[in-house]
Each structure stands twice: as structure tokens, then as C-alpha cells.
Amino acid sequence: MYPAEQLILLIFITLTGLCIGSFLNVVILRTLSGESIVFPPSKCPKCGNKLKWWHNIPVLSYIFLGGKCGFCKEKISIQYPIVELITCIIFVMTYLKLGFTLDLLFALIFFSLLIVIAGTDIKEKAVYDVHTHSLIIIGLVYALILTGIDMYGSYQLFGEVYLGNSWFQTLPVINSLLGLFTGAAVMEIAARIGYPIAGNRAFGDGDTFIAAGIGALFGWRAILLILAVSVGVQVVMTLPVYFKKLYTQKEFKTLISLTLFLIAAIIYGAAQYSGIIENTIIYLIAAVILAVIGLYSCKQIITGLKNTDAQTYLPFGPAMVIATLLVYFLWNSSTLPF
Image 1 (cartoon, rainbow, N blue to C red):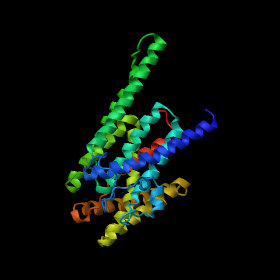
Image 2: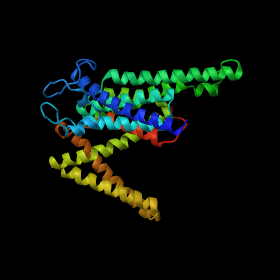
Image 3: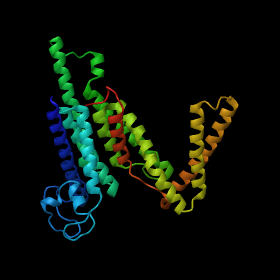
Image 4: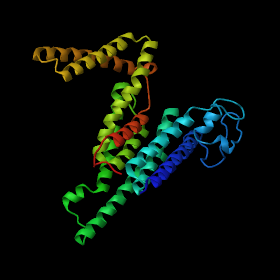
């Protein structure tokens, strides 16, 4: 492909990403309001006036209007340009990775659904079956197509469809089904651990379906990595909010113990990584101290969870979405789809 053609395709993908991002904003907001995503036409949520075409130009309209409605001058949510830009960036990065292929179509549809799921979960802590079930369907359909391609390739090579054990174990549709059940099972087990600790689920039902959908597309190996990364992402997002709430509610024992544990863990990890801790006795003493602080912090956190007023909840769906994107774009592995 000539450079000029590549540039034209890149511009096309960029503009498409911005336009799809604008549409995803509509899907997010109208899913939450229960309205059709087709009718009525776009309008200001504050004054109800039908928007002009120049009010709907992705990102640019927000800038030119100064972040305010062109009619009532009420502030426009920053969500609009953020979703448009994020969608555009994801579209461009995916295109650069895959090229203009059938894989690209499946990837962009899948990632668009993830953006919608993250959007509704962040705004209202709500995950909708129509979105999560669509994730699962896309993952299974993509796996079936890959399986069909593999079967056709086997037929072309051997004159028949080869069903040997090693080939069957790597069959895309089998990997997809295993990923679906692995994601759902891990999230359900984690969710039900919340009952003996806090008297309710640790995660919502929607999170189970999100994990199942991601697993259906990426397979059982990748979904385990994605869920592990999700925990790290959730911790990073939750800690500032949790610390602030502990301070506001004057839970100083939990705040101090958790702070000490994090500081001690960082020092311990850095010392171990750099090789400073060489003496076995010092190593064990440091490990015991770290464990004691950690156990006390856990006791304080669990005690706080039993108090409904002290609970701090951030949806886990966005963490899974971020982790999926991180793993897909940063982890080089032939086991991933696309």
C-alpha cells in the first residue's frame, strides 16, 4: 500500500473513531434514560432544544461552544469529548496493529461495547445485559469464524478436516468457550466471597457477564491475566477514594495501618529487588513485620465493610475494560485474538 493510501485510511479511521465516539455517548446516555438510540434526534438534556448539525461535530463543537449549550448556555458534560477522544485513540491504535482487515471490524465493535459498558457503569454503576450478552455473542461468533478458517485450511492441506487431539485442544471455539466459563466462574467465586465478609456480593452480576464476554473473545489464558491486571487497576483507582473516606469518617486506625502497610510493602519490595536484604534473619523479621501490619490492616478493612455506612464502592467493570485494553495493546502474545 502506498503512503498516500495509508494516510487516507488513517484519516478515515480517525474520523470514524470520533463519529462512533459521538454515537457511543448517545448509547450510554439513552440506555440509562431508557430512550431509543435512534429517535428522537439529538437534543440538549437541559433545555430540550433539538441540536443543529454544527452542535454535533465531535470534540470541535465542544471547543467552539465553550463547553456550553448553544441555546440555554448550560454546561455540557465533559463526558462527550472524553468518550469521543478515547474511542478515536482506540480505533487508531487498533487499526495500526491490525490493518484494514476483518479482524479490525470485530475488534472495533468489541472495544466500542466495552466503552459503553464502562460509561454506564461509571455514571450509574449499572451494567446492561444487552451490552454484556453482545460481548459474549461477538466472542463466540469470532471464534466460530476462526474455527471455520482452520477447518478449511486443514481440508486444503490434508484433503480432509483433521481432528487430531493437539489440533482440537487449540480449536478457537473451544478456547472461546473455556474463556467464557473461566471468566464467569472466577468472577462468581470472587463475588460470593463477599457474603461471609460483608453480607452481600463483592461484585455485581454484570461483572460476571463482562468477564464471560472478554473470556469468550480472548480465551481462558488471557482472561486470567486480564482479571489479575483488573485487580491492580481497581486498587489504583480505589485507594485515593478509600483513603479520603477513611479520613472524612475519622477511621484513623485503618488509615494509619493501611498507609504503614503500603509504605512497608514498597520498602520491602524495593529492598528485595535491589538485593539489599541478604541476611536471612533480617529477611524473615522484615517479612513477619510486614505480615503483621498487613493482617491488622485486613482486620480493620473487614470490620469497616460490615458497617454499610463505611463502605466505599467503585464499579469493577471499568477496571476490567482498562485491563483488557492494557493487555491487548501492551502484551505481545500469539494467544490473543485479532
